[in-house]
Amino acid sequence: MSYLRYLARRFGFAVFSLYAVVSLAFLLGSAMIQKNLSGILASARYNGASPERIAEIRAAFRAERGLDVPLHERYVSWLVDVTTLQWGQSVSYDASVIAVLDGRVQTTLAYVLPGVAVGVLAGVLLGVLAALTHDRLPDWLSRFGAYVAFGVPSFAVALVAIRIYPGLLTPQYIAVGAVALSVVAGQLRFARTAALERSGEPFVTFLKAKGTGGVRLARHVLRNAALPIISLSVTELVGVLVLQIYVLELVLGIDGIAQVSLTAIRESDVALVIWTTMVVVVVGITGNFLKDALYGLLDPRVTTQ
Image 1 (cartoon, rainbow, N blue to C red):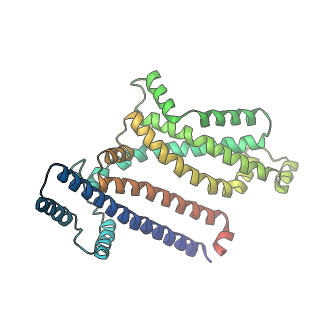
Image 2 (cartoon, rainbow, N blue to C red):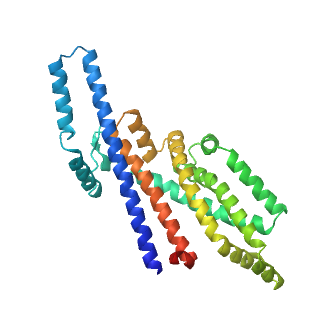
Image 3 (cartoon, helix red, strand yellow):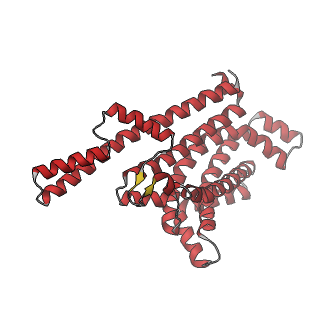
């Protein structure tokens, strides 16, 4: 199988996964709408509404949300709306979901992407350095730094930075540093473990016997350790970042997608809850697709399976 065929197959699987999640979102959204209807009817009964009035409220609610349409027709309409970016209205912001998300997704990405880039680069380089200096000072310092980074919550770093440098650092810059700190420890651990496994192999002994050292040796080790690093790190990255963006945007007051998601949850804004969650899911699926693409590029054997 060629690399392009492998890539096309993985892309197809990613699209299938996305629409499977979209279908699940449709079912959950329908259930949440029914729950809201039950709450509205219960409130009307509590306030002494007559059976006729309750029937009118139920009919108006179902007509407004298209619940009178058969389920399969609503599902097809849902898929069309998803594909054409017709994601409904947000009741908490009194605007379309697309208008609410527009700009806020970019705000989140503006600190997540550079934070991830810095964290991954620093973590991998430090991890390989630690492996090549096993049980020596650089190794001990790197491992100690990783333990500290694991133990210190990113929101605590953000709060301290705000107190020490008020007005000097913007919340976005602080968020970049906090994301990088939360990522670097895991990347260092993965890179060190993978590089240690490769550093005892014959090719490393051969390179050392030839006098190869420093950057050239690290490059050879990293090239051979890249597959397990990519495989392990992408999965952890997605999980870490999902948690980090909610904490950081709440603490730093950044008006990004996590802040919108929290508002939607508080206000029971069904459409906005679903689509802010879907944006995070899309990021996760995209990350896994990129991981598969890199995996196939670095290891041609994968494309033959």
